[in-house]
Length: 335
Image 1 (tube, one colour):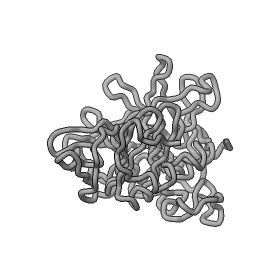
Image 2: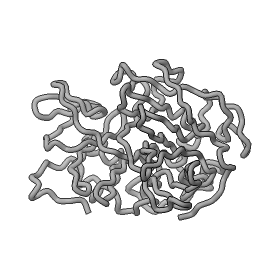
Image 3: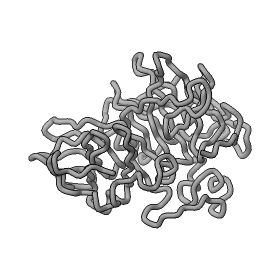
C-alpha cells in the first residue's frame, strides 16, 4: 500500500453539522448518495466533492457518509467502534490514490474504500458498512417523495483551489469533471492529465468502470456495471454465506438479498418476477413487497482491484451473470 501526504490535514473540510432541506439547486442528473433513513437522505456528489466526509447522526445513530472522487468511492459507515463514537476528517493523505480519513478521537488513519484503520491506536479495526445507494437526483425525488437533501455550507476547500490552500467553494463548479471524462486514473492523472495515469494491465474492464463491491463472510466480490448491462442487467451469486441479486439499472447498481425469484428484465430499471414488477433501484415491487438492501461499496474498478486483487470480480466475468436460479444444494459458490 502506497501512502503519501498530498495536502494539509483538513484542507478539505468535513461537514460535521449537516443541514437538510427538501429543495436542491443542482442539476436533475446530479448523482446523490442515498440513505434509506427516516426520512430518506440524499448527499449530492456535487457537495461531497468539496468535503468528502459528512459526519451525520440519524437520531442517535451516528454514520459517516464518505466519498473519494479519485476512486469514485461512495461508502457509508457506522461511526461507533468498540462503544466509542468517532468523528472523521480528511487527513490529506492518499493510500493507493484513495482517501485516508482520520478520526479526531484517537488520530488513527483509515483507508476510505476499505473502512480499515491502517495506522494509529485503532490500527486493524474495521468500520461497519451501512446499506446505501447512488441515484440521480431526479430519481431520488421521484422514488422518495418525503426525502431530504444535504445543503451547501459556507466553507473553504482545497478542492476549490489551484494550489494546496483552501479557497471559497462555488458548488456550481465541478472540480473532477475532466478527471471523470478522461481514461487515466489516480491522483497523477487528475493533476497531470492522461500521460500521468497509472498502468492498467487488463483489457476486459476499464479502470474507471463503476463496480458495486460486496463483502460477506470474509469474501469480497465486485459486480462491474458494464458486465451486468451486457448480460441483461441482473446477476445472482453467493457471497460468503449470503445469496445476493444485483441489478444494473438506469439509476446505477443495487444489491439485495436474493429471495430466490427468477428476475427477468422488464424495462430500463425494472425486473419481472413472481407475477409482479420490481424496481431494481429500490427493491420495491408493485404488489407492496420490498427486498432487503445489502451493505455495499460503490467505487471504480481500479480501487476495488487495489483492495482485493484482480480475481475479486463476479466469477468468469459475464459468464456468471443472469444464470438461472439453482437450489442451494447445486448452486455454485463464487470463488
